[in-house]
Length: 628
Image 1 (cartoon, rainbow, N blue to C red):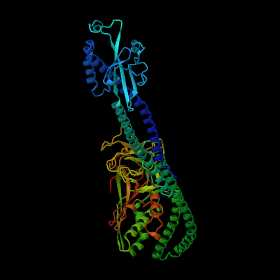
Image 2: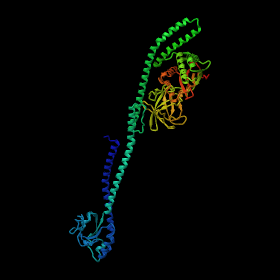
Image 3: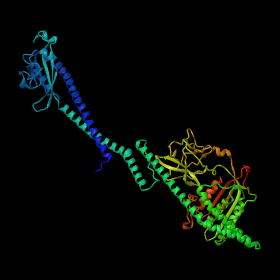
């Protein structure tokens, strides 16, 4: 049978509390009882002195009847059980109980072995304890005090009954007081102590239950739930870090473990994809190269025989050129897997566009798709691989044709010369934390580039955030969004070092900032307040606008949903079903990336899409070039 930790803790706490209260009661109650008895004894002593002063005249003048009445009157007051006067030998001479007058004090019955008695010197009683506790006939406790009546000079010189001056003690005043009120006070104290003990037990139990629930049970339940989700295969899960205790450290370590498992899974998946791509490319190369060789051979023979027919020769040249391009595409698949660098030479992008459109024009005409060219005259040449850029262009046009569909529409292709600022365009291709950990997440792409992977601590929660790698953009991704305006803490996902900038302040909202290093290119700084788009990359801003040649392909199709747009350039991602392989845009992105350029997509559902390729101009081009 399972026993909850909370029940064991509360039970142990209850036992400790009860033992503590019992020990406290054992120390307090006797001290309280002794204090009450001491107070009663002090009161009895004061009362005795008052009585002695009150009956002094009656004793001095030997007015026995009046003295007896005074004794009875005083003894009738509340809090006095019995009042009596004893002579030097302990014989009762006056008492509130007349039946004992003339009888000696029964010291044994009143538990007072040191009280005055016949045959004992009265002076000896002066050195005894003047108070005693004994039980009355009804079992109630009684406090008795005996105070000596000393020989006053007026007594030894009085005419009525003189005492010799050698007698220091003439008698004793015995006052007995019931302890019923003291016993009731002690009983009330015991009841209050028991009540306080019960209340303390309840409150401590409730407090322990609450603390145990907040500090132990909930974190353990969250950890158990997270463990079950991970066991079921959910590696995107994370548990909130709600404390700085050992359980908080355990939660952080759990989240780190899950992130690393997720990274390992993504790496294995990507490795499997690349391995599949390698096998596919090898198979394609083996199966296609042989028939392509035959096509090339027979096309070359036909070209030699078509010298007298210019029209047929032109068609055969197209067949020969495109067959060679098919061969290059097969090589491109291998290049994508091996990241082979392009063979660059001065290339006219306008000519690349014209050749690409000529290749697909028949297919576009069948689908009633018109092509509108807006090619900038005098466009500067760029250093690029001619065949690879044609492959990119054909992929973009065919994708645009698929987006337009069989209903017909328009594809607009534009080229121009432009200068782009760092803000909103400069890619962050490498970054690291202060300890040198690589922060690039190569499995997640934002805008075609690998995202920057960070850990964000926000409102007591910890989650992974993938930061947009384009400087100035804020298309960050996270599975646990943070409320607008909340200031978060950012950490390295590997070594957990804080990325906060000491004394750093946002240039817009003055909130704290965090930073990542870009090796060889300074560092990029962002605001930590959620919703603020401020960023700063001084090294990129210092370079100024970058001259580029821009190629745009815009279609009038149905547009791309936002959830699809973010995955466009991932290998094997396709929305075409069996008709697509998911490699076209991935290969195109790889080609543009290896040329040092960028490719991005903009789209709105129902309003078409716009793909923009930017390639840097040749090094001898002026940096202040403007748009054509």
